[in-house]
Length: 106
Image (cartoon, rainbow, N blue to C red; front, top):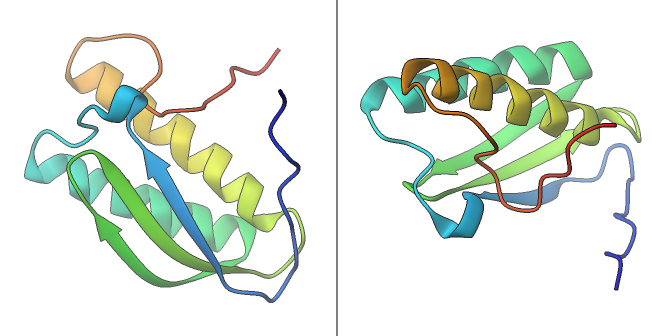
């Protein structure tokens, strides 16, 4: 059964959870957390999202985000997901997805 469409409302704070694939670790060293935060700041600025709070845990992330436009949050998460996975795959010489529920673009 397909996932229900996400509700997208500009100006409404949203709680986002991003989990590691199979709930596996997605942060392995202190530098990884910093790389994620750097990408989060860059993406939030680029796509017009206000980040009110975040919690980075070993296997998942919680974000409290208010998007400026209906598409802002999905653009941020797509950017953040791909940018951080590229970093992890390069640093740890691995390949494939890192996040749970990620669908590769066609």
